[in-house]
Length: 88
Image 1: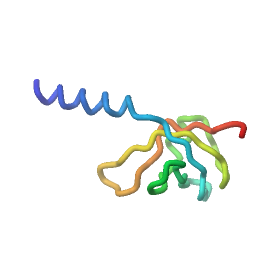
Image 2: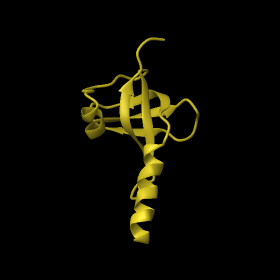
Image 3: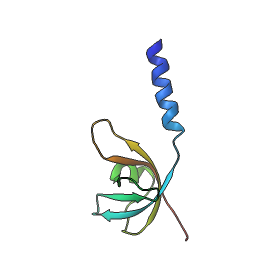
Image 4: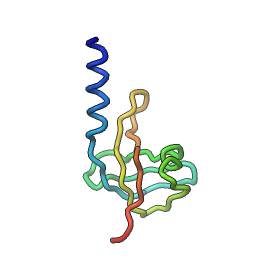
């Protein structure tokens, strides 16, 4: 039972994460990177997460909202729950 409690805590922590704002700084047609407004390392924007959000392509300079997650097998943070930010 202690393992289930640890897993549940991990899931709850992810669900409570805040969304961040950022600007797309690189897009090559298959993946890209966004620079978070709060600073820190760029966040990887992969096509699977973009497709989940209904986004087929991005352009450099576009504003996005995302949840930055840390992968266990990569060093680069990656974006989940990606949304385009409309307006100024």
